[in-house]
Image 1 (cartoon, helix red, strand yellow):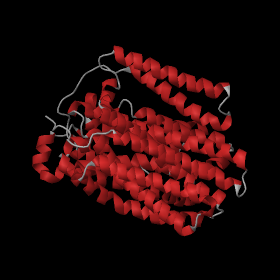
Image 2 (cartoon, rainbow, N blue to C red; image 1 turned 45 degrees about the vertical axis):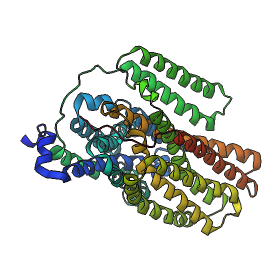
Image 3 (cartoon, rainbow, N blue to C red; image 1 turned 120 degrees about the vertical axis):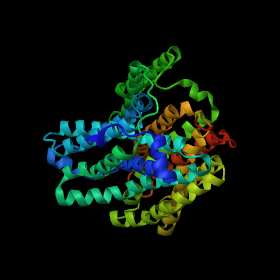
Image 4 (cartoon, rainbow, N blue to C red; image 1 turned 30 degrees about the vertical axis):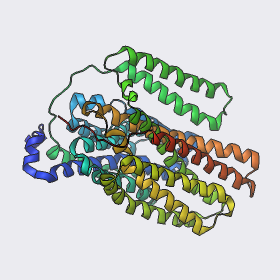
Length: 477
C-alpha cells in the first residue's frame, strides 16, 4: 500500500528518469484521454441493439448519446479549479476511477435509465480528462518541441475514433451491447497504474473556493443550447419549446457574464478574451469542432443516402483519408516546431474547407476517385490543424492562465461538435423537404449542407487571420 501514497515531487522524478520523463507523463495522459475518447466514439454502433433490447424508439435511445455529450461538455468546466485544488495526479486518478466504475455499472445496468446514468458519469469523467493533455504539454515541453509533442498526443487521440466503431462492432456481435461499455476500461486501468507510480505530487495547492454559481449558469446555458439545437429535429425552429430553450441559453449566458464581472475568481475569467489571439483561437476551436463532427456525420450519410453506396463501399472510400490523417499528424507536429502555428492552422483550415467545397460543387455527379481525393485533402487539412491550433491559441498565455484557457478551448471545440451534428442534420432534413428525397433533389440538399460547412470554415479562416504570429508563451516560473 505504500505505493499508493502521494508520489514524489516532479523534480525528483525528473532527476530519476531524465529527459524522457516528460514524454512518459504525456504518454500516461494520452492513454487516459484515449479511454475517454473510446467511450465517446464507440457507442453509436450500439444504438440499434439498445433499441431492440429495451424496446425503445431511436429518439429515446439518443438520450444515452446526448446525455454523454452534454455531461462531457459540462465536465470540462471545473477542470481548472480541480487541478489547482487537488493537482494533476489526484484529478487524473479520480477521473479514471469514475470512468471505470461508470463503465462497469453500465455493463451491468438492468434498465435503460441506469444506462443513461452510467453514460452521464462517463461523460463527466471524459470531460475532465480531455483538457489535461494539452495543459501538461504546454507546461512540460519547451516551445521548440511543443509541436512534435502535440503531434504525438493528437496522433493517439485521432486514431481512436477510426478504430473504435470496428472494435465496438466486433465486441457487440460477440458479447452484446453491454460489452461496449468496457471498451475503454483496459486503457483506463493501465493509465491509472502508470499514474500511481509516475505522476508527481502537486508542487502547491491553491485553496480558493469553488464557483458553484458560475458552474450553475454555464451548465444551464450549455444544456439549454444543446437541447435547443436538438429540438429543431422534433419540434422545429418556431416551436415554443425550441425558442424557450434558445432564450434560456441566452439568459443563462448573460447572468454568467454579470456574475463573472462581480466575482474576483470566477470559474472562467472573462479577461482571458481580452487577448485577441486567445479569443480568435477559441472561435476557431468552435468552428473546427463544428466542422469535424458535422463532416464525420454528413459524408457517410451522403454516400449512402444520396449516392446509394453500401456501407462497405462507403467505408472503403473513406479509408485512404484516414491513412492520410495518420501520416500527416506527426509531420504537422514537426512543422509546428519550425513554422508559425498560426499559418499552419490557416493552411489546414483552407484545405479542410476546400474539401467540403468540392462535395458541394460536384454534388451527385461526384465520382469515386473525386470522393477519395476530396476526403484526403480534408484529412490532410485536419492533420495540420490538430497539433497547431492549441499551440497558436495557448502559446501566448501566461503560465497562471493555462489551466482555464486550455479548458475553454476544449469546451468550445466540444460544444461546436455537438452543435455541428445537430445543425447539419436539421439543415439537410429541411432542404430535403424543399427539394425532395430522390435524385436530383436530394443532391441539392446535401450540396447545400456541404456549402454550409464551407461557410463555417471561411469564418474560421477569417478569425485565424487575427491571431498573433510571432512570439511564444512565457516560460513557467
